[in-house]
Amino acid sequence: MHNVTLEQARKIIDACLQKSEELNVKMNIAVVDSGTNLVAFNKMDGAWLGSIDIAQKKAKTARFFNMNSGEIGKLSQPGGSLYNIEHSNGGLITFPGGVLLKNAEGEIIGAVGVSGSTVENDHTVAEAGANAL
Image 1 (cartoon, rainbow, N blue to C red):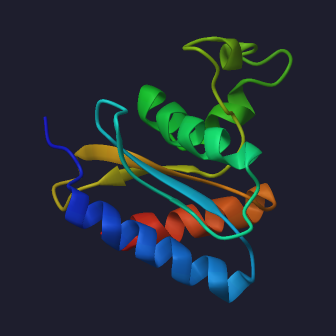
Image 2 (tube, rainbow, N blue to C red):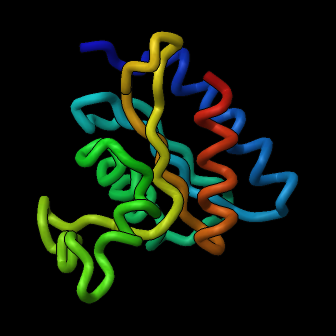
Image 3 (cartoon, one colour):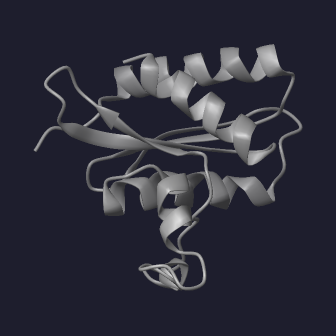
């Protein structure tokens, strides 16, 4: 099993920071490896303290189920096949902002989680980070 390296995580965070600055938002950014262990974290000055936990849980949620956190959110609505899944695994975050990280061979090597603005901005920033690979 391959994992995101610290060097890759720094590139991801740098890309997320650049996108956050373009959008004029303050973000918390978490990068986890394929085992959901935290590899790197960045809290922008002025970012919400409550979003530290959310960013990390978005990254873990994406990796736990090998899909972006927003996709899990669609499946976890009332009547959905994953309704109430957010109560599992010590608490999941099932709205956008958690994005899988894949290597050149398409293998999942971790995930990035971003929190601090609207879920649309969170997802946009996380995608920018994932695309840095």
